[in-house]
Length: 148
Image (cartoon, rainbow, N blue to C red; front, side, top):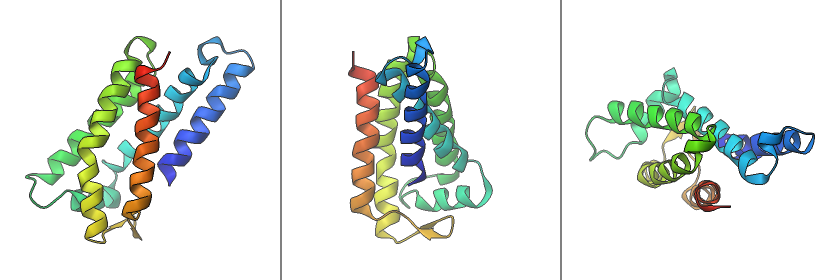
């Protein structure tokens, strides 16, 4: 739920900043870039922080090799994408790449839900809710990639 909150609050605050005169944030698409960047910065931090990192490593489907390396790599890609979202010249490509990354990582969420794993001591998000969230996140990336 924290990633959704980061997306909504980040985009909302950025949009408010645009409404009060910050030209670079004047519009929903630039504000959405900020929200999505904040969301990915938040999720990337879990890839490197103690217990959450261990939980993410456990979420990687067992058939994939080197789950520790995959978690590190996806965390670095999320961070790079978050930074690239903040640069207007790279934002569309970054959003598209992050959309593909979300699709590539979704099987780990499915695997974790089916295996009833925990994240930070709590059960992972149930699969139906996680799928709905995935659509929201993908829609945000698509609006940035293919919007006006």
